[in-house]
Amino acid sequence: MSIVRYSTSNDFVPTSFSTLIDRFFNDSWSRSGGSAYSFVPKVDILEAEKAYEIHLAIPGVNKDDFKIDLNENRLTVSGERKFGKEKKESNLYVVESQYGNFSRAFTLPENVDASKITAVYNNGILEITVPKDEKKAVKTSIKVN
Image (cartoon, rainbow, N blue to C red; front, side, top):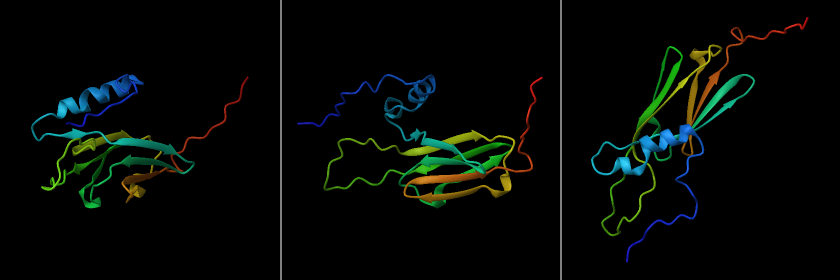
């Protein structure tokens, strides 16, 4: 007897064009065979009054394995989530967790203070805080004639 994943949802229908493109490049069919596995972590981006927050869901990675680079206004987060060794006493039937190399890049707005960007990894979520630069903030009122 074998175990087969069953889904009653219509999860093959993309909710947006971006989702369609992501699934095309990252679905499991593209990871069959070889060792060049990769995935794109899910991201939440929030904007507060004084900062932007970028939350990446990447469980099972050591905090020292993240590489965060800022080049001009492009913030890139990359790394690798390694697959653990299979236990000899158990059989592996389904692996839905994503493993391999990952990379996400974000173009930051002009009004950020790049020297004060911080990153914290807690409970599988990498939280990057990008403070806004108050000097660069553009606030203006426009009078209607």
